[in-house]
Image (cartoon, rainbow, N blue to C red; front, side):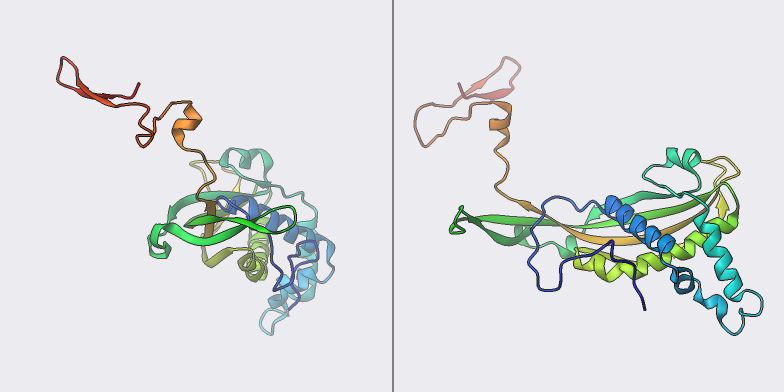
Length: 257
């Protein structure tokens, strides 16, 4: 199977890539993947045959066949299809593809003791190890929601649905290499979202779960008191005594000055 395309390449297996810290931006990653896949579809002559090849199967060929595949490819190519990150832009940008986060949580079943993940060597200019940094992590599960919207015809929504599913499946192994695992998906039927959008917009939604690891440096931030400029005496130095006092209403406080 030919996978999409040279515009979305990763290091060869075995290459040590740089460690990136923070929460994996799943929504932005999906936007880049879908844009790359759409570019592949628009510029690769055999792409429509790969995505809609079943229309040439025994049962469908006489009614649809190659002619229908060509029509679908030409039909999709007529439209500029932006990707938006918010509901409010759907009506303005339609036809479009929207990316929404339905729910996210830290998965306790995949968490380790004290969230310890690794030790990272700290190198000087000559690549000598001069220290080590503790790396923690959060295992994060995101429930993602990709919407396909058209104010032209429900046919465009249907064709784009098949294309997006093909792209997500085709890129799944590459996404996993970059630390983002996609689960199986489920989708809704074409509907008019009268509650949220104008009645002439047809939508179909693809729902799936992604799993990522969010690494962070445990000693990267100063303590909060330093950020706020609050002096915290060191009891071990003996330079300050903390006195325990009581207010008139019985509430107790500790004087650190």
